[in-house]
Length: 401
Image (cartoon, rainbow, N blue to C red; front, top):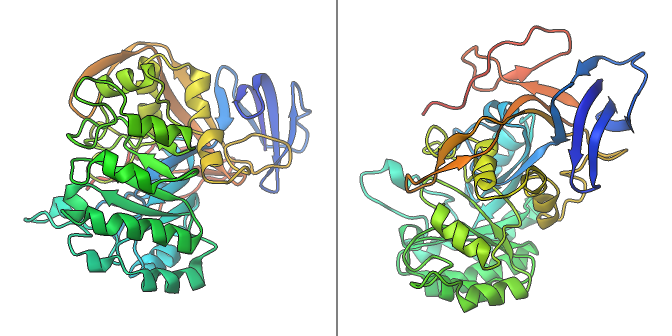
């Protein structure tokens, strides 16, 4: 396959110009201003933007296993996301099913963080009562995590804890040290979600060390916000930054405020990853997909190069995966082709506050491991592969829950 005449923007290498990209056996085998097309299936990308496949640092992709899960194979192709980081949808009790029934068959790459809770993420929003996965702290069973490590340790990329009152109630003082211990046992980063207290963000941050991840950094929740009542960055957040804690956006349905983001960014709290926290309750709401969230950061003054960096090589580096989020010779042929639309559009945060974005990104082609992936509007949840030469059908714009 040969992608011709597109503007290749690869922040990891600094490449930004009109280049052809040649692909064979799932790898990038050529990067040059002009590559002879003989022997290649040619895709004309004139006027389009070609970038490394996007890495969404915060998703929920256990579709069919949790009521919040969305189907990566349906949403990924129309959004340019080739790597989905699932943040704790499954726990020790459900990880095996997630791995064999979703991760392995997926045409895209799904990288899992395991939930501290044995039962995984509970579908609290779908129940008549709000029951979090750690309302009973005994679900934080380290023996079960050791068992899962023995079989799936090479697959699990992190431990996830939702440290907010809707997930763990008043059990913060118990589950926070257990989360730290769990990550150390599995020898992986710890990702902690902050939201409405308890526990407060000041209580959470001491459990994160260099390389760990704080998510929902621009959420407006009382007690869980990175800003104090005077809209100043909390000292505990500055300390976390200085010791190397990584910062993830995790937009979500209720975790992103333009006002908080603007004030925090002005005071030096920049993200290491722009991510969606996409799930079944927000895919048709304020989140939609990763390009939609990227446009919100352009409304905050980020450049196109910055938002591409924060959705490619930067989150890949947070994951310890320098093989991802890059367009380089010999590397995985994960690529996305976008049209940049410069018509201003009004976008909204989780509180309904609007800002005008100067541009948006519309994905026209997604390749993962050298294969074109596409979603066909034929009613099948699994989708199917697109082969060069086939006519391209209309895209399904996400799971309808």
